[in-house]
Amino acid sequence: MTQGLVLRWIARGILLCITGFWIWFGIADGLHDAQSAGLMGFIMMLPAALVTLALLYVVWRWELVGAYVLLGITLLGAFMFYENIRRMTLQGAGPRFMEGLLGLSIFVLPFLVPAVLLLVKCQLDRQARTAAGRAQPAG
Image (cartoon, rainbow, N blue to C red; front, side, top):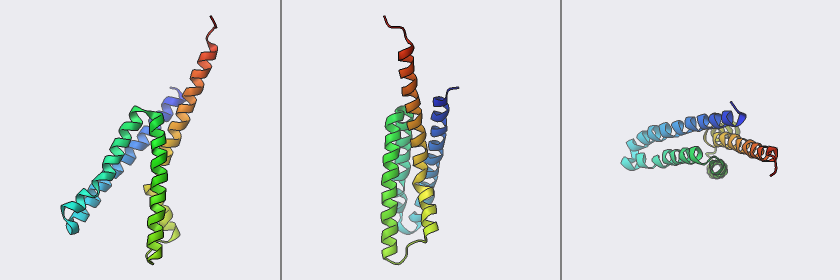
């Protein structure tokens, strides 16, 4: 088994876990929110699950594009997380540092791991193709 294949399946496995988490989280939190906000409370939580399902499809189908999309989602998620923490702090209800770090590591940073793995895998594939091209005799 090649290194690229191992990296591919580790990244896919992590992304499957992330997707499962967001589907579970969207349903569980949506059901909780539906108690106070009705059906709209449930519907508001579904986009996160749908985005991760779409992301899983993109990564599975086009690894390099998926890696860049994962990086973009990581950056966007980190920015949104920072903005939410900043607003909460300005209102006097912000979490302590460790709570914020825990939230960031649970909701945002897991997308970075498969992105890096897929970028490394694509780089290894590129190097292997280059080496194979050089090894062929001219003529």
